[in-house]
Length: 102
Image (tube, rainbow, N blue to C red; front, side, top):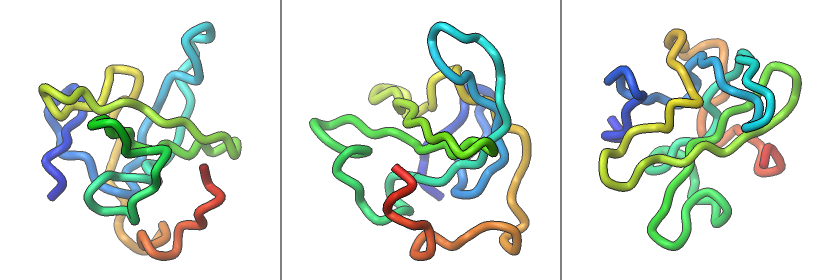
């Protein structure tokens, strides 16, 4: 367990199904999967630096977005909503996720 939570209090796990806001200007919610999780994934310098950490969300349309984890609360910002858990057979393990995802 990473200790990181969604806004609703659910634990964040690698491979979770989520919906996320595509950008600040477009408030449309899109489906995606959690593809980077600090403490679980291999450290990536663009996702963990200067005391800040981000989770990575891969959209089903091939896009990728990093979403800040609030340092004080260890919660993912409200732009990501938990939808469901991965059963472990439908997603890559952390060492199989290609580095060029981000």
